[in-house]
Amino acid sequence: MKKIITLFVGFAATALMVSSVNAAGGGNEVKDEVHMNMSDKASLQNGAKLFVNHCLNCHSLGYSRYNRVAEDLEIPLHLLKENLMFTTEKEGDLMTTTMPVEDAKRWFGVAPPDLTLVARVRKPDWIYTYLRAFYQDESSPSGWNNSLFENVAMPHAMYELQGVQRMVGKADMHGGDGHGPTLEAGQKLVGDAIFELQHPGKLTPAEFDVAMTDLTAFLTYVAEPAQLKRKTIGVFTLGFLIILLLLCILLKKEYWRDVH
Image (cartoon, rainbow, N blue to C red; front, side, top):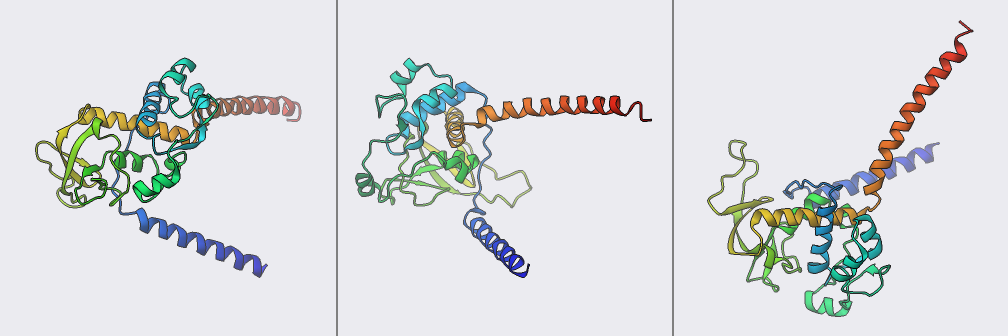
């Protein structure tokens, strides 16, 4: 018994230590809240298009297949082949990049990670903030930096959509009168960083935020494709259990009627 208690205490201490380290590593990050609608197929389809056109050149979705994405997001197969399948010819293939790992290491210093589970590791709010937090930085090898992930090796893959912004400072998120930092005309707050748009992109800032919401939703779907169906199944299951409970109560009353 003592050995079991000692083992349990050891596991608990280890879990507490790991959670403390994780909190120390990301607890100070200021992230914007993303409002996604996982039942909005148009949003998810746009997110898939953005990922294939801007992210799949470097990042794979090594646990996701084209035909599964098409089925879940209600994308006709002919549109899938015409607009989303650039790295393969087979519908059942995994969504992998054609970039060689060695070339990626030489160009970026590190191979771009697979993003299938990034939404479960980093969480959607982090992804949404990160995608909008790129700014021009001449001191960086790529010419870009990110306020949420300082000195990131990744360049800004969607600068043509967002445009070129520069960071003018960090906001005090805990000071002031509780209404948040005061921004000047033309400034935008992403996380705790204040940006100014130097050169506009193809999308307005509001349109770009919507696009990054769609991309975040798609990555959230990819991390757990079953979530599109399990919530519906859960509702029907709870409804069935409630009906079964009522029938059991009525049956119990019927059995015990003569006893009393």
